Every structure is written in C-alpha cells, then in structure tokens.
Length: 140
Image (cartoon, rainbow, N blue to C red; front, top):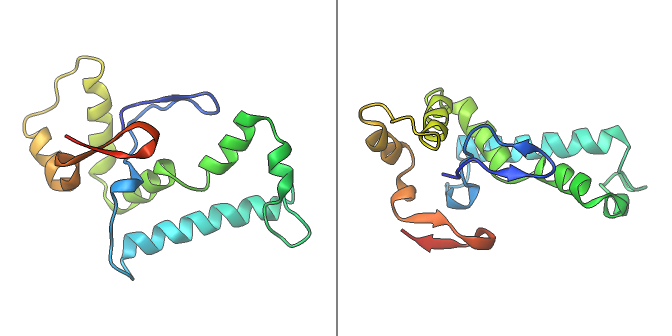
C-alpha cells in the first residue's frame, strides 16, 4: 500500500493509496470491470466538457499546452492508484478505515490489535512486493 504522499497538483493525500500495479484479475472480474468503467466515465466527463477535446472527440493536444501540474492533475484523475483506491473502497467498506489506520501509524498511533494480519488477508501481495522507484516493484 502506498504511504501518504504529497503531489504538487493535489496537495497532501490524506490517506494511503493502494498501488494498482499489484492488482491482477481474471477477465470479467467485477472489480476489474468497475475500474474500467470508472476510468471510461472519468474520461468521458473530461471529453464532454469540451475543454480539452480535439475535433474527433478525444482529449487532444491542447492538454500538452497546459502547465505541467494541470496536465498531471487531469491525467492522474483518469488512471492510477487514486482511481483504483476509489473503486476498491466502493466494493469493500473495511478498506477506507484500514487506510486511515495505516495513515495514522505514520503519526505514531499504534494500529489496533490484529491490524497487520487483516491487511495481509486483504492485500496478500503486499507481503511480497512494494512499489519501488518509478513504479517498479522491489522485493520486501
């Protein structure tokens, strides 16, 4: 799981985000389908705004003319751990409190009894991989 991060275009992220690079699912998986639908919905909303669309109805080259942080804000609203975390939280009501508890450990608050075991059950790949630099994986 990602630790809280600061990104210039969003400010301090108030809770850790789940790394989408550690997600795997079979074709037709409900969560995978919802992630794809959410990404498509967010893309359509930006295209429908007309603010960045080209003549073919796609996000056009006009986004390349934007200031770097504004461009990053648009792109990260469409893909990545933020979208992934939003969808996972809609599917599992236990995840949001767990992310908050993970965040609180950064500020010296001890996690509740059984927290680590529950995290390992929910996110078993976290025992084996962690996001490394530039989004690569590194062994624990």
